[in-house]
Image 1 (cartoon, helix red, strand yellow):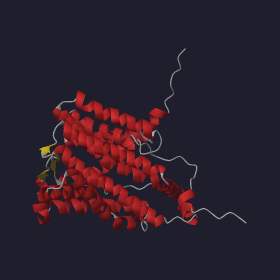
Image 2 (cartoon, rainbow, N blue to C red; image 1 turned 45 degrees about the horizontal axis):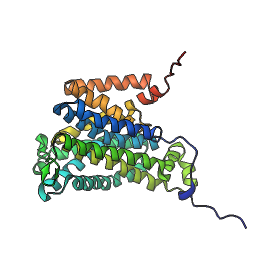
Image 3 (tube, helix red, strand yellow; image 1 turned 90 degrees about the vertical axis):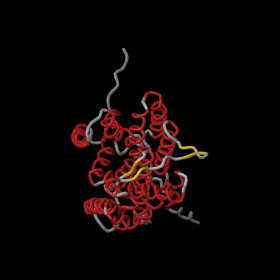
Length: 330
């Protein structure tokens, strides 16, 4: 008797290079060391800037997830950030939810709101979906800033974001930073596990040849919708973390220009590396703020560094550093 075929979902393991898994353990170790050292060497103000940058890296990681797997240009992240941030804020203000629970619910709301977008990814080409991302982000930003939701969002002026509490005491300073750092580190570890799973491998095969994936029995539409929801969940979680880190959240923070900045952070660091989102965010978000650059100067710097990397290091700085030949000792 011939052996029964094994289901695709449990046995398919194509022998191809998987993004975000390359140097994943060492990347997490570097992140852990960096996050642990920051409170020691930075002042309180500088630590706030660093925590805000770390929070943005979660949204950048979502961009890297979509781009490195199926080539998705996720330009909807700012919209998901503002949705997740204000959902968490309302839960904390009105019903006194603990921050972690409010952030989880905000993440879930972002994932659910992205399902229609995921459905559209199955029917639009990559360029059309990128244009849709711009339109969706612009619409959400304008709606959140309008008079219709001014009681919820504070309009263009925004609203203060309450500090997380533990045992009735606010988590501020190093303790508040530690909470943000822990959530960020866990979110990066989850991304590495995701791409080691069958789903991550199938997504990569879909990027290389969608027809082959469908022929092998893969429901490509379901996987694209799931990926869109996961990517958007990272954006929504990032919005809640940004509010917690800075103590303030406003719709104008999450405009269309931020879509380009997040994509630039992913590409500069290296979208194929787990540490790439963290490195790119520090270079383009934290360092300019640390040096006191004005907003317009930061945007110009983002453009300059992005153009330089596209020419000199098209796969990101981490990929370029990996291929630098090491000098041997005599």
